[in-house]
Length: 70
Image (cartoon, rainbow, N blue to C red):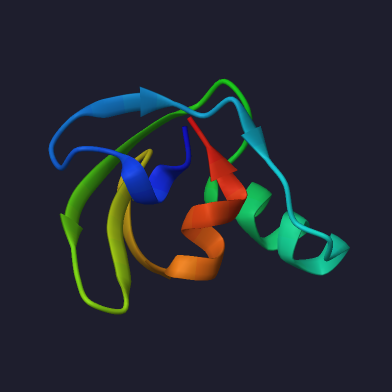
């Protein structure tokens, strides 16, 4: 399932991050967003999601949330 379809407050394990941009993949990896890592949707906003990865909270847009499969 795509991260955009996730339920708020539930922890998921990232199965795959699929973008067509190597630089974006590298950036997400530096945040800790890669296969096998837990991710939690803190809240859903009109423009995207607030997610918790490791010890940080990040705001990601719908494009990125569709690229992350949990």
